Image (cartoon, rainbow, N blue to C red):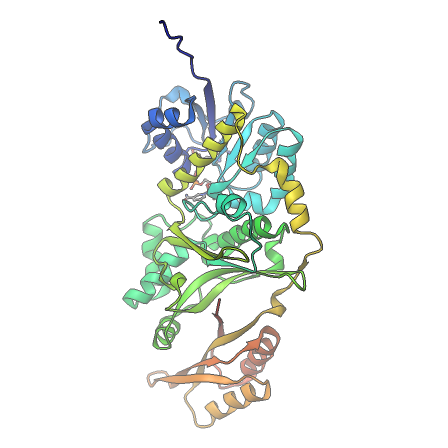
Length: 445
Ligand SMILES: NC(=O)c1ccc[n+]([C@@H]2O[C@H](COP(=O)([O-])OP(=O)(O)OC[C@H]3O[C@@H](n4cnc5c(N)ncnc54)[C@H](OP(=O)(O)O)[C@@H]3O)[C@@H](O)[C@H]2O)c1
């Protein structure tokens, strides 16, 4: 009997951006096309990629006819079904994304800065125009954290989510810990390896990880938090004194995003800062460029996900998983949790939730003071601590005879931000304190 061969639907994909991620997505779809097409039951066609400089040499070569320096020829092409926004930034990316959604295209994005700033607008545009906005690659690179939160752990409410969300900072801190080198020494290597974003502040001052924390907080708690409402601190001030003393006490220093929800008080706290964390915690052993996210759910308990947080291949893996979801949606197959439903789910989740500001943080602390090495200085310092009600847990000092100074390192028992701020203010006023006091929180999950 003659079998009628059904031709597969062709799904057409356009890329905005052909840089690190764009080239990775193109390379992997091209290399694995037949396997992907077999799994998805469609044919995938890479139509065009928009760049800013057509003359730039690229590691992944594609026919010149497939490159354009006019991104509107991607979003306005009526034959393109899926647009991958891999340009970055928030201005042009927003304009192009809204235009593609308005045209009914599914948009896939890795752009955490854009989602953090305009997520609500983009989700509602997708809903209004009957299409979808997928963004798995925007948080923790190759770790499928968005799907895990939305689908795998949908039965849970999350009193605590914390993790390492910036691979560059983790790489620098890991090498400082392992090799005893200074922050500037390793920053040079990280730059040479292309690990640091063009705007270094995103990695080094914590903003990149803060954007990701905002997205996770929204998905888990239905409340958009602005980065300026959060405590955001980066890793620039950390020295070998801090790393070595932390090690002596059984800690490592990691740049942590911490999202807590008190369900009784209906209060949410989102923060991003370096912290001492016990070496016994699995998260403390997430090193190098890896990311880790620990989710404590009321049903599942604690789940830890670890994987490559950035880079071409890990990020492409996440983008392609969104392309697969887009194909499911285009085929009308039962879709994973999608943005049409988001509005209702997230509005309920976030109903009445109050934001707890940085002043609500309670923690044990680590304090470094650089002081003149003179009689009576230690007594004056401990007097201030005691007057402010800060109880010392440990203390050590390193004399620096060449400069006639000493570094005093303390850890404290549980205290809070208000008390520590007053303490630092008083310490700074001491004439024997020669540098701005340096404070880190000690994180206990
Ligand atoms: N790199 C990672 O590991 C990673 C991980 C997770 C998420 N992300 C996110 O993914 C996105 C892309 O990152 P990336 O590292 O791939 O950036 P990238 O290497 O700088 O690539 C950006 C691309 O956008 C193009 N572009 C910029 N302005 C344009 C314009 N006006 N018109 C047309 N094209 C334009 C650039 O063109 P030219 O090539 O001609 O300059 C380049 O191809 C960002 O949102 C980033 O935050 C990146």
